[in-house]
Every structure is written in C-alpha cells, then in structure tokens.
Length: 227
Image (cartoon, rainbow, N blue to C red; front, side, top):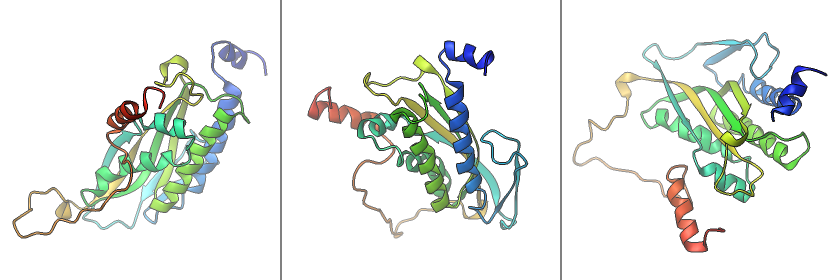
C-alpha cells in the first residue's frame, strides 16, 4: 500500500501492526460474545475490534438496575513489564473495574477497554507478542467471569506513554469500563452494619491491584533504584 499508511509510518504509527493486532483483538472479543447468559450480541461486523455491533440484555430480574464503573491497571503495568508477565495483567484490569460492582452486590456483564501503548512494534517481535498476550489473557479472564468483551480501542501514542524504566520495551496504559447490574434493594452499602454482626476477611498472599505506587517505592527502598 502507498499513501496514507506510509505517511503514518513516517509519523511513528505502525498501521500494519495495528491492523494485525486489531484483527486478533477482534477475534478475542468475538469469542466472548456467549460468555454471559444475560447478554445477547448482534455483530454484523464479523468480529472486527471496532466494528459495528449492538447488544441487548435479557433474563435479569426486573428489580435489577444497570450500573457502570471505570478503572485501570495504573502503575502495575511497570511490574508486568519488569516481570515479563503480560497474560495476567487482564485479571487486574477486570478486577479493578468489576469489583466496584461486586462489592455492592452487583455483577459485571459487558466490558469495553482502551489500550494505549508507546508502540506495538512489528508482528513477531517481543513487544508485539507481549500485547498479544495481554488480549489473550483478557479473553481468558472474561470467560472465567462470564463477561462479554464488547468493543475496544488500541492507540500507539509514542512518547505520551512512558515508564520509569527507560529500558522497558513494553510501555502501556490499560483501562476500561464495566457495565453491570445490581438489585437496589439488596445493595451492600454498610449502612445496616450493627453490633453483633460477623466480619469475614480473606487473607491475600502477595500484592493486590491497588497501591502499586507504594509497592514500587518499597521495592526501590529495599533493592535500590535498579530493582
């Protein structure tokens, strides 16, 4: 191809890698369309990542109302890159968005995500493969949670996406919005807590998805700036 793609390439945007990645992400999304018993997707686009599609909800109790939350991986993406563990990053992404619903007694149904990267790099390179691992992990996590991956956006933003590790070849920000449902009559808000009730806590081994800026500071204090 000549013309516009070549001009984009001169400006630092890898159009060919972007098209290849979007096609793969579209396939991952399409595989999720039957994840939820409450969501029916109409997809005339054939599964293209940003293609035309719509959905309707059915089977939810009439008392349920819709709710939405947005969140992202934050600075934990630096730890993902340092450890070379990309497939697990989606679990944090869905947890950060989904638990804002589930902690109130709701359920997640449909998820949209935005992946901003410094560069996708060429197909077959370690950087490109890392982002393939990201979306593959997203598909796996969504299947476990019965969440539909409805649509997404990926953008190469060059220097706008950076890292405290200048040697990192994989620089990205990942965020999204979860559509869910909740029964207002059974919403968990804490206003009904009373003396005599039991509090159940689950022990967490390792880091959670919040407070990673403090985790990174602790690692630097213990191991030095080259942690």
